[in-house]
Length: 297
Image 1 (cartoon, rainbow, N blue to C red):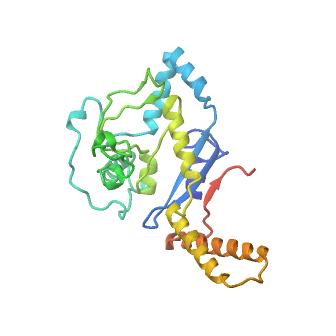
Image 2 (image 1 turned 90 degrees about the vertical axis):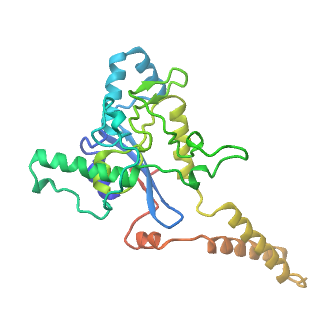
């Protein structure tokens, strides 16, 4: 992560991949199987606030076109080489390539510029299929209410199979809708995907309802509690039962002693039920943190 911030983002030094970054905040999360991943917000110099951005896009067609061009260059929603003219030929059920996670990526020092660019596109193509090709799983529908039908429209990941031949500003929500030239490929940046060789997602927090939804989504992840509610409640219930049995026939202990004992047991029981994966342990041992931030308050 530190290498990504220093080399790719180039925080507070020069213009990086996404522009001149003037701030960042990343939070580390462990998935159910223990795999670590990072959710990161980047602040780019010169980015207007959502209201001003929306006004500028409505009033200035040239500015809107430049913004769409910049976003489409950074955020890919299709396999490399796909264009609006070739979208009908896009792969919909490709053969799985050899696992590109384990392959040595093309090295620019070993190839001519044209040969490297071709090898780069081929490698990103394999990675996009392996890492960012979405297939519905039970996780996509874990938040459905009773009676809701499983399908593209109800996918929690919002991969609904829709495609857009060009980017546009939604007239109803005032949200930016980027062109989507493939129904199954989730957003990615080709350079980041090439460098990290793993699943990724990238979003632009711009204007309208989409910006509000993304802000809520990021805030929810940043403040996410590792201990699930039902597990915590079970720990509290077990502690109360144990506490009552311990002091059942004790009439001499002070009330303050009982309260302190209950609080200590409750905290210990809840902390004891917090699961830490071996990936988290190793990350802490080598100096990795729970978050990465450019500013301290």
